[in-house]
Amino acid sequence: MPAFKGVVLSRSCSSDSALQTHYRDEIDLSTARANAKVAGVLFEKAMAGDTAYMIFWLKTRARWSEKAEVQQDNRILVLTDGPMTDKEFEGKFCTGAPIEIPLSSA
Image (cartoon, rainbow, N blue to C red; front, side, top):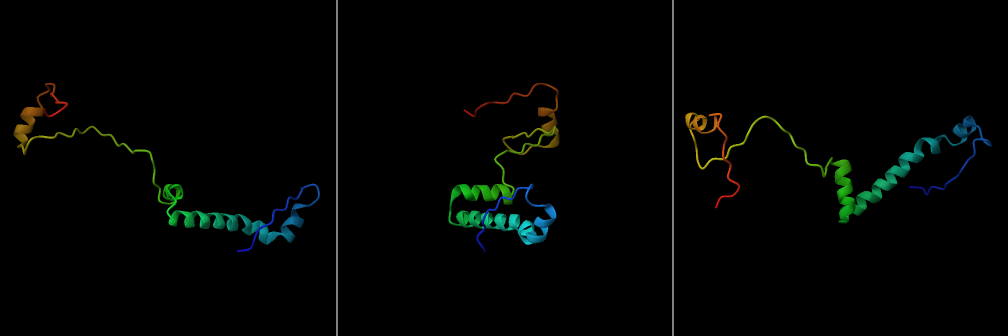
C-alpha cells in the first residue's frame, strides 16, 4: 500500500473542478485506503492478543455491548420445592393473598 503525503490546498488558489480533474483518484480512494490501513492495524493488534483492541473489535464488529438488555413482561417466575399440579399452584399462588418470599434459605 503506498504511503500517503498530506497536501493542504486552499480553495482560494484552486478551483473544485481543477482538484477533481487532477486528483480524482486521491479524492475517491484516500478515505477508503486510510480506513483499510487503520482497520488492518486494529485487526493485527487484536489477533496478537491486545485486550483493548479485542474489546473494541467485538463491540464494533460483533455488536457486543456492556449494557445489559432487560426485557420486562407481566409474568412472575415461581420457584418451588418440587412439581405441583395446576390445582396446587392455583391454591397456593392465585388466592389474591400476599405471597411470602423468603430472602434466604436457612
